[in-house]
Amino acid sequence: MARVTDRRLLLGALLLAAAWTALGLHVERGGTVLGTGTPPFVLGWSPGVNPWIVGAVAAAGALVAAAPALLRGPRWVYLSATTGFAVALALTIGAARIGAHGWSAIFDDSFEAKNEYLPGLPALSYGRGFFLDHFAELVPAVPVDVAGHPPGLMLVLDATGVTTAGRLAALCIGAAVAIPALTYALALGLAGEARPAPVRAGEGSVQRWAARRAGARAGQARVAAPGGSMGDAAGLGPLSVRVVQDTDEVLEATRPAPVPVAAPGSSRTADPEATARIAGLLAAASPGVLLFGVTSADAVYAALGTAAAALLVRRSWAARSAGAGVLGLGALCSWALPAMGAFAALVAWRRSGWRDALALAVLSAVPFLALNAVLAGAYGYDPIGTLRATEAVYRRSLAGGRPYWFWSVGSPVAWAVSAGLPVAGAWLIAVRRRDVAALALAAVVLVASVAGFTKGETERIWLMFVPLACVAAATVVGPRAVRPVLLALVLQALVVQVLFETVW
Image 1 (cartoon, rainbow, N blue to C red):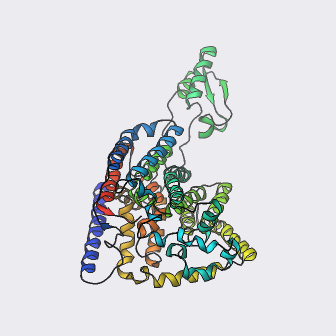
Image 2: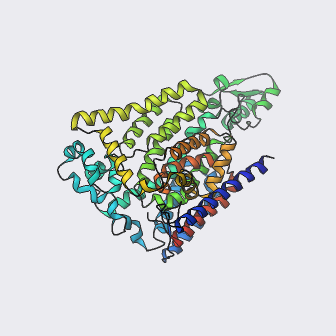
Image 3: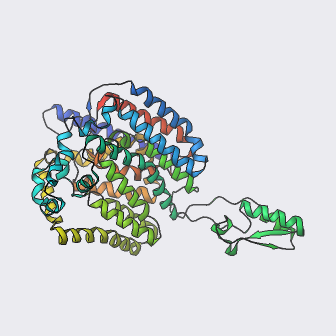
């Protein structure tokens, strides 16, 4: 029955996406401007292929072939290989249309380049203090992407010498290929909600070996970890060996450990490590990351947001404090980054109640508020005036003319499809199964859609939500389904890249 319900859910979602796309094309042809090339998508039909496509196909095939082994191998092998595959896919798919120039064209000679960050660097010619002091007044005069964000990234580019198209492309590519590993870390952080079943003493392999040695010497023995906890039984705590006088206890000591189970009300799998690895692989193959992350500064925001979320969802307040610091720095680069704090707070609410969620929300806000206060006091930066100026630019831009009625649905549709059809489908199933991360992401997407802050171009603007979707999807995609799912994802990325101009 559950499978039938899942299929109906997926069919309904697919029909909605197809119907909304057909509606967008019909309305656009009827003379109403919706504001993108192929509403609700930002891309436009423009087939093109380069010999680099051969390398892209080879990299995609290698990832699909290696996936099962990566789920079983050592962690360092998994992280190294997944990052390597992410680099290979990013470079080859990014060059599959126009060659290697495709990596930096968006910042160089693309029709969109004038709206990007590099043309805004002259605003820093009078110094960073002047730039911060007058940023709110500069917003109407700087390129659209600079005007649409706080000044953080511009300060970083100026301070690090990232002032050319090639260097900015390298920064974006580096951020994009870090996303799979960060997604893996996020999934492990979320695994804190899973409570392993109690493990009797002697259930670890080390303990079984010690029990056999003790039994050989004394006749009857077993190994016990103090307190009988999972951590101690796995060899993470002090190990003690005691000799007992009961043969039955020897047999009990050598019995295999039971598989850990998820906490009540959670759909997370019993093996957090396997789930986390699947999540990382999904992120490495996601069309959204490969098509809109590698050549967009939003990859930087996505990496910062995922790193912050990976720390904020942990139960340790030390980790949460570090995550709040990362979030504060990230929010100085993108107005959308606080959504990651909201995601973490929703996760905390579902796991531990409203008090924990409120405490986490307050903690997440403190570094951002403190940083803005310091910049305001030291340099005269006006964050409220900047936000108002950005909102005014948004109203006068192309996005301001996009009708709300269409984009309130079109924006999440475009983002979900670009994240990868299998990822979006698995995320929806996880929502139905009431997975904590899936529900939290659904709430964030719903608020963002209804609020209408980003009408269109969500394939890149909401890129930071893709790792969250991958983490939720990983609770549904089992190890046996990894290969076909990855194959579908990379095929989608390749087909879109050679048939459509994705702008970024």
